[in-house]
Each structure stands twice: as structure tokens, then as C-alpha cells.
Length: 270
Image (spheres, rainbow, N blue to C red):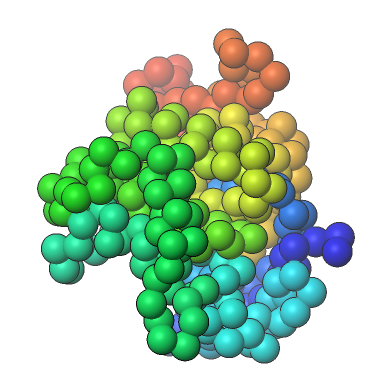
């Protein structure tokens, strides 16, 4: 199987507005694939389509060689796990209770967890460093702790693909790197494909194997980070001045938005 995901001619319309327009791309097994673009580009809508949460699209989503509409919800949950941008804590579940929910797609007809399921859940909590929080309620966690607990639940599903929607939003730089390093380590050790939506161009540059740049529901460009994070392309897509150079850590592009106050007067507000 060459590609684990094939997106073919995907379009989505909502209230007579075209949200996505003829989107095409592929993702290889084990890739760290990052979807970037300005607000309103259609990134989250696209991720929901890939995750089977949005069904009113035109086109084809092929996962592991099979069209996503041909999957049962249970079977799709064995293949795909999603970490949403907004994590709702509606019920006072503990971390351990939340993580073991990741085993639901794999349970037998009685829906009862066995020793293997609890072992996998413990491994997922160990991997995400939340084992010491096992009995803590979700609403008692910090933002970084909550994000790691939800990622542990996704890992517990043992999926082929993990979908992440802005997983580092509202986290400080230290916790951003912890989340990203965690996903990179899991991808490397287990061969899991990671597909992430991100507004952070520098995290996309450092972690992404390939990037997909969207604007107004269309693909602007896809490819390796250096080819996508190109100054003129970013300025046109985001509508602001950018500087793109090499990061001090080497081998990756660094993107710096330039506020008007740092531009010569004749170039301000252009």
C-alpha cells in the first residue's frame, strides 16, 4: 500500500458557501503531515472529513485502500483516532477512565475491558507521562496535562492514523514542545501516521515531513517544509509581511511575521 490516505476531489459546501474546493493530496504511512493556512482556510473542516465526522462532502476519502464511507463507525475507530481542538469536560471522569475509553472500538460483544485492555491503557499513560494523574479528574488538570490525557486515549485506540486539531493551542512553549516531541516519538517508534492542523508555522517546519497549505478552501501548495514555507507564498496566503530564513538550530526554515512598526514608513499598511 503506497498511501495510507488518499484525498480525491474533495469539496464541501455549507449554506451556499464553498468551504473546500477540489482538494487532492495523499499521505504516506508513518508520515508527519501538517495542514496549515490562515483562519477560514477550511483546515478543521478537512480534518473532520478525514476523521469521518463530516459527511456532506463530495469526492473520495480513501483510508488504507478503502473508501471511508464503506467503514463501520467501529472499524473506522480502530483505524483513526482524533484529538479535537476543543476538549469538553462534561463529566467528572478520571484520567484512567478517560484513557481506557480508547479501547471501546476493540471490545467484544459484552463491552467489558480485559487484562490486555488495561495493560494497553497503562502503557499509553506511561508513554504520555500521565500515570501519576490516573485518579485525577479531568477538570482538575492543567492545559498540558489534559492534552496529554486525551492523546493517551487516542494512543490507547492503537490506530494507524492520529488526527490532531491544533494540539498546542493555548500551551506555553515548553508544553508545546512536549506535545510535539511526544507525537514524534510515537510516530517514530510505532510507525503511526500523524496528520495535524496547526497555525504555528515554526512547529510545522520543525516537525512536519510534508505540509499542505490551504487558503479559502483551495490547496495553495503541498510539499516538504522548505518548499511550502516560501516568503512570497506565505505573504500572499496570510496577508502580512513575513521573513523566512534558516533557524538557528539548523536544517529547518524559520518564519517570522513582521509587524508594521518594524517596516519602513512607506511600506506600512500596504
